[in-house]
Amino acid sequence: MLESTETMMNPGIEELLDRAGSKFALVAVASRRARGINTYYSQLGAALSHGVVPPQVTSTAHKPLSIAFEEIAADKIVGVGGATGNPIPEELLPSEPEEGSDQVASEGVETPEQD
Image (cartoon, rainbow, N blue to C red; front, top):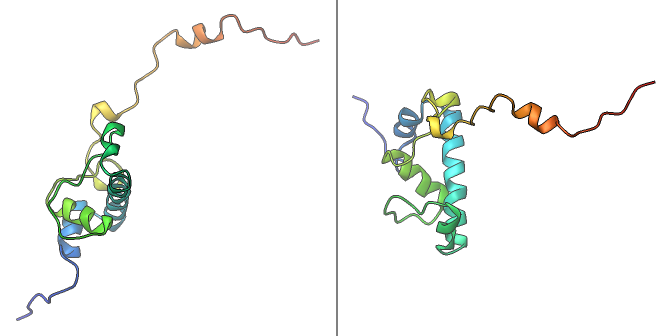
């Protein structure tokens, strides 16, 4: 007859851990998103031109980390790679260097002669 106890944290840590997969992944995703939210608010919307995404949930919270946790709980933010177990999308992976690009870069470069 254990009942869930009310905590000050909403959403609960158990719900967030289920979504993130591990404590490390939760901290990494939430802190990165909180920094983005903080940047957005500090530039008062001008950050949109720099690729900073505004908050994705309607929240009464004022702290960026609380807003980030609410976004994770609402499945608006999903971590990829590393401890999350989610694959990294192809468009985020670095492109492979083309063959022959090393030769082009080294052409015209003189090497010192050795005696």
